[in-house]
Amino acid sequence: MAPPSSRRAGFSRRAQYGLFLGYVVAVAGILFALLLLAIAAIDPRGFAALKGAALDATAPIGRGAGEVGRFFGGIVSGIGDYVRAGSKNAELRREVESARRELIRAKAIEFENRRLRQIVGLAGEIEDEVTQGRIVGSSYTSGRRFATLAAGTASGVAIGQPVRAPEGLIGRVLETGRWAARILLLSDAYSNVPVRLTRDGTSAFAKGTGEPLIELRTLEVGPNPFRIGDIVVTSGVGGLYPPNIPVARVVRIEGDKALAAPVAEPGRADFAIVLRPYQPAADGPLEAGPRFQEGPVTVAAPPPAPGQANPATSPTRQRSPQYQPALQRPQAAVPGAARPPEPRR
Amino acid sequence: MSRTAGSRGAVAFRDLRRRFMPVGSTLAASLLALFPIVASRPLVPEFALLVVIAWRLLRPEIWPAYMALGLGLFNDLVAGHPLGQSMALWTIIFLACDYIDSRLGFRDHWMDWLIAAAALLFHSAASWYIAMLMGATMDFALYLPQLGVAVLIYPLVARMVLGLDRWRLSQ
Image (cartoon, rainbow over all chains, first blue to last red; front, side, top):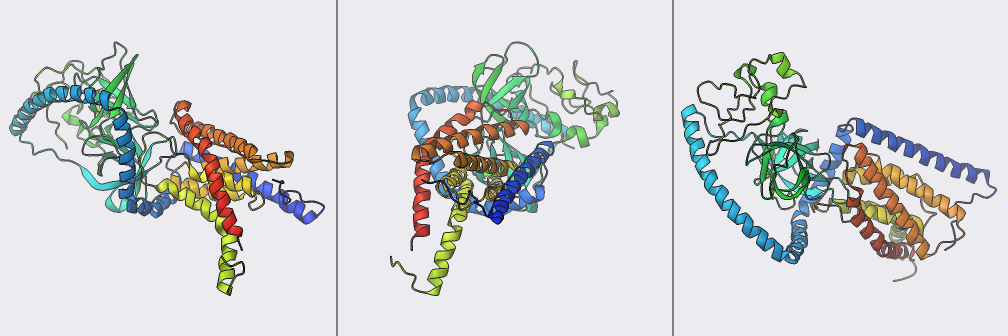
């Protein structure tokens, strides 16, 4: 194919200037776009209005085609499941066995929990739910892992709120439009969730890798505490994610870290629930003592467990950003002891 | 199909089709990113990028390089990339194509494919780097399957664009 003649301006001054001006505009445009990128890197919330408007304009398309997408997504994962049927079967059998054991334990704990709640006189769990919405799309062509939620500021969604499915945590709200919001999924490489191992309370971080599995790292140096099949739940550290939402299940151990599969699959979840950020340290009463109690607490007056944050810590120190009561050494759970009901506000 | 336009309306339609088919098909390809799949890893290539490269290589004369700014902005907004990513990368690809055209006497299909593959590789590497700047450090190997699929699917997209171009210019 012959190269274009329009790129050869010939002797026409006008054509030469036009061509040159075109390149000037293009290069200036690249510089402008790089500037936009730099602004986005410094302040991820920049251009919120523009991006929110784009979300609003495009979300209905995904909503309409939602069923079609679910159908095709089901086919793709169905093929994958078929290929890995054998290993999947064995894995499921193991999982059912461990789940049965866990269930019995959970029932005992639930009973004890209810009893303790009655003693303290607490009402049932207050789920701080903002709204519910369908997941209508994702950034499937990019390396980042975002999803689009069909609920926005009109129904109370705000940037930073945690999002969960009935099964477990999905991520948090990153951008909002009026009727749609973009969610940062757990598997995105930017996502970092403080978690706790349900078996012994070890604190860890669940960091996305951009791949389906997320990475678990402990805060302490020492032997790898994770075992295959372990469940991690949110710990409530940092005040964003409410504690005790299931996050992931360990599927592989690698050196000093573990790889875990998220419990909630945003692709299959019908509804996502947007929660209020959990901020016990920020807006809870400080004189009530540290909220991140890991060990068993007596009902009357919670004494500080050894190694725990000292309630005498001055409020100013607690407010300082460096102060992290829950990052201290967690206690090993006493077998059979229930987690104390955490009073909310 | 009759070779002459029957009415004023038909003439207007053919004129619009001739003018706006490339832009329209690129915007439509951007909108494919709204398809409601929630993928757990990037595998599906970015169709808008493939379509824009195919149009640029097939019809170098229809678009000046700065046209990629607007198309890229639309793609960024729709696909949820950081604002400016497609704007910058697509324009750089267009400028590189202009440079190659000014150096190269002619291009054939294989050459087009090679140029497209290089452009796709550049785009993957740059978007990986931009994600890193935004705080999402990933393994570049994560992008390789998507890149492979994109390179292999390019001839198909080029055929589709060629078909659209034929229809666009048909009398």
